[in-house]
Length: 388
Image 1 (cartoon, rainbow, N blue to C red):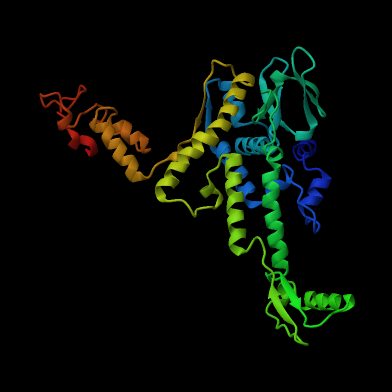
Image 2: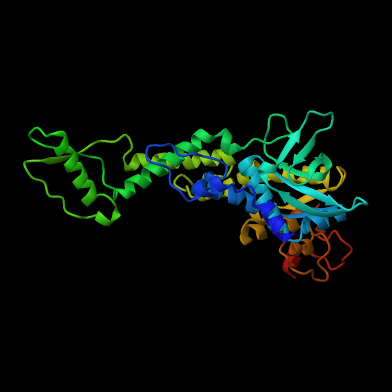
């Protein structure tokens, strides 16, 4: 049983793709970009893993107890974190991810079985769409947890890697060109100028000897001896060192636009300041993570619980302010009578203290009579009671 599950879980790693994973692009050919090979490039890997990890660690609470228990323990072989991370990562790269909802004969939720990407298709030829699977045959939509990316019909997600393959191919080509340059010890493109005529064989001999003794990292720093009045000229390139750096920066920004992850989270910090970094954390939540969590929320309501149940994700870890900022905000809330002092302590994960459950007002926010305690406590609490 375990062997079969693991085979199904990793079945989307075909032999050809796995072989490509460890191979280099042949010289002169453009890199081939697929949802799997795109992960070879650090900006894509960082963006996809960041989104998948953050969606997985967002603590979820479902009001339907049975759905909540299943979502916390999806199957015997994966933790909830691993299950949500792999499902989100597949949806990010391929546009879709699938898990069979296994129920008992009586209809009780039993487990969520992840399925490989290429083993599931959606049949819309009938009045009610259903899924065709290689391992379980025809499966009704109500028994398939389907996390999908954006799609034109709303039923099937499109892979952002395939849709934006041109931009990713440009990025891959830049890395390939830089790799070839490093294989040549970073030497620029050179022209050997001879004062006299040279035969084809002589030109080929000079080229071969130079490549044999001065290309590759092991030959870096070796002296170059010229004879017969030969000189070397550097051939200008459309992409010098500065141009390559700018092109790579633009590719990182392209990946940022593709996945909705701020560029500084992908390692590009040249144009960021502290204020913009703080703002981009909120932008990352509002413009990226919240959309994927909404996809999870609606699918859970539709397939595991009911549309009337609530699904809440705790994302405080993404936008949690510093301790000083929290203290300042809580003090303002206490002074304005919005929260009690014990409620403020709860926000800081601190235990309550007797006598701090009443709402108080700062003296300068009173209604004229100097009354600052709005609860039943007759101790005449003032703002000084915030830490008492």
